[in-house]
Structures are given as structure tokens and as C-alpha cells.
Length: 371
Image (cartoon, rainbow, N blue to C red; front, side, top):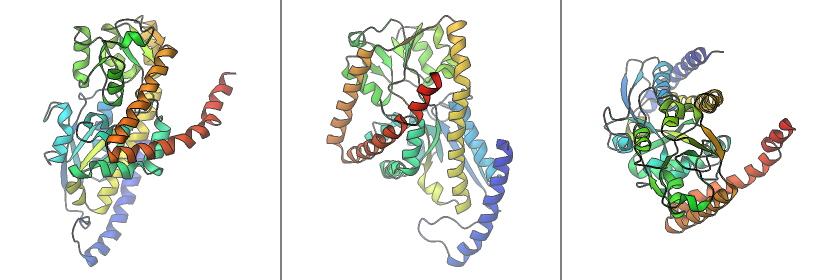
């Protein structure tokens, strides 16, 4: 079944369910933060701000797909208009825009908000943590979503997973990395926990929105950058600013993108429109990961074969040092913040058994497939 047909059918089913639910809701009345009763004549118009450039492959187009999907699934009852980074607010002010109600929604990545909620970073990517499949399992079925809501509750924001890039690349460098010593003094664009680990390794982490990366790398403002992976990196032309391309993306093994929703705006929606928002986020999460998996191979081939990019793995000594620093950082953060401790414990307790399972399932199959 084509995605458009699926969305159309699902939207119809939700609409039928809402009609039945609306009668009961009218009988019971509406109090407090209960959802509004279903009313097909009631219309909602939402703004979505993003941290991405407009139409940027995967991230920007994924945000647009989310806005369009919600609009279509709701039959136009809830229309979402997207504003890319800088059109209404700067990229890194999207969180505040949703919190203060100037936009009902935003699309971005949770590690951008570490200054507001240190635990937020765990819901985007944890260095040497869980991959996309494992992150989704933790969020949807392992208690992660409830903790995510708890982290954002003081800001009046509801978070939803709304995309995943899969395992990212380690980044672009203007020099070769032979040992941990080569990280000392390195000015690198790298957000979240990865940036803090680089700093502990002697580097100088820099946080930049996507639109500023190329120029900063090209002009020497930074020495290196991570972004996403071959598909996005090729689109940004990063191969024209640095020639060494390292893997794996130790800092982002399964990067969850997020949809931020103003809590009051969400509570004002009828139940069937709340369901539309939630299901649309899940659909975009699945679709984005599939799209990255489909697009990255050809993009990597083009970077190496057409543009002469030098593809290299990080040395084992570098990986060991960064892993040690990652463990130290998480332990220290947990000791300083009760919510970080709660989130880190949940993350750790879910990761251990799922890794054991994947050793005899996913990893064993990968080895068998190459034998």
C-alpha cells in the first residue's frame, strides 16, 4: 500500500472514531486539561518552527512531511504550516518558541536544549549508546517516553520522536587523526554529549546550526565538523571544505529527531486530532530512518569515487579513550542531577539486555551474512 493511501485510510478511521467519541465527550462535558470534544467544523491552525534549513534532505523534508501528514490525516481540521530556521525564530530558539506559545510545534533534536534540561540529551543520542532500533524500543516500550515528558514538563512542552538518521558518520576533518593526542586543541562543531566528551579529550566543541557549518569549516573557523551522514553531508558540500571523512559516528549511534508540541495547544485538540499528531510522528520516524538507509549508500559512493574523499575509520586508541570519557561524563552528570540519574539508569538498564539480545540476533546475522 502506498504511503498516501495508508494515510488517507488511517485518517478516515480516526475520523470515524472521533465521531463516536465526540458524542460521549459531549455527554460527559469537558473539564480541566481534558481534550476538546470532537467538532468537525472546528479548525486549528498551527505553526511549526524548525532547526533545519528549508527542504534540506531528510531533516528539513522530514519536518515538512510531518506538517503535511498531520494536515492530510486530519482532513484539514488541523493544518500545520512549517517555518524553517530563521524565518520566525533562529534555529536554536525553536524550543523557546514552543514553550512561550509563539509556535505550537517545533522539529529539532533534543541535545540542542541541554542548557535548559541536561537530561534532554539522552533522548537524542548517547555516545556509544543505543542505535535507532534500540532507541525506539526504549522510547516506545521501555519507559523512555515517560521520562522524556517528565524532562520537558516544566516548560509546558510535550515531546515526540519524529525521525531518526540511524548511525551517523564520525565527521569531517582537515587533518588525519592518528591518536587521542590529535584531538587536543581541535575546534569541532559537535553538539550534545559528544561535544562535552571532545572537550574532556582536549578539544574545543562548537555548537552551530546546520546552515553555518560549511562556511565555518571552509574558512577555518572550525577544524572539523560532524553533521549527519553521506546523504546530508554531500548536500551541504562538506567534501569541498575538508577531505578526511571518519567513521563510525560514536557520538550519535541512533539519533532521534523530535517534535515539540506546546502542551496547552495539544490539550485543546479533540482526542482524534491528538491521535493524528502522535501517529504522524511515529510514521515520520519510521519513514525518515528508511529514507536515510536508502539514500546514504549512493551518496557515500559519490563522495569517495567522484569527489576523492578519503574515508577512514577512527583508530582503536581514539575509540577507547572517547568511550572511557563518555562513561565518566554520564556518571558525573548523574551524580549532579536527580533527573539525569533517573534517565541514565533507565537507559543503562534497557541497553544491557537489548545489547545481549542483539549479539545473538542482529550482530550474529551480520557476521553470518559476510561469511
